[in-house]
Image (cartoon, rainbow, N blue to C red):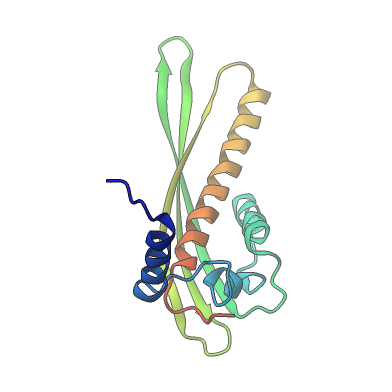
Amino acid sequence: MWCSDRRAFLAGLAAFALTGCRFTPVYGPGGAGRALMGAVRADDPVSRADYQFVAALEERLGRPVRAGYALSYRIGQSELETGVVRSLGPTRIQLSGTLDFVLTDAATGAQVASGRIVADSAYSTTSNQLTTLTAAEDAELRLMRMLVDGLVTRLMTEPGLRRA
């Protein structure tokens, strides 16, 4: 049904939205996005996947300037041959990754969030060895970025974060 008085309808809808749901924009004043920007210090990386993960995390949240939170993490990866040709062998590899994490408040040592993020990426093994190696490295980088995206989304919805 068409509402003839759109302004009154939109004003009523805005009033309901502001009072009823307590919506706070993630990057707005008091949002979790601002609480995380430059405030998460991840454990020191040891492997190539760890380096890619930390680089992607710092790309999303910025380098830790005022590290209010400490992030402990463990990355697991597995490969599955999804396409096999009898005379060629595997032609497609699926990378599965898991990220187990614990976010703690650096000031109090209290655990703020923990959990597991899962993501998948794939690459093709056709052509020569160099292109296969390059495709595998690219798939691993994409996998780390997907794990970071899942982690940041999860953290921004955590109720226990101090708001900036």
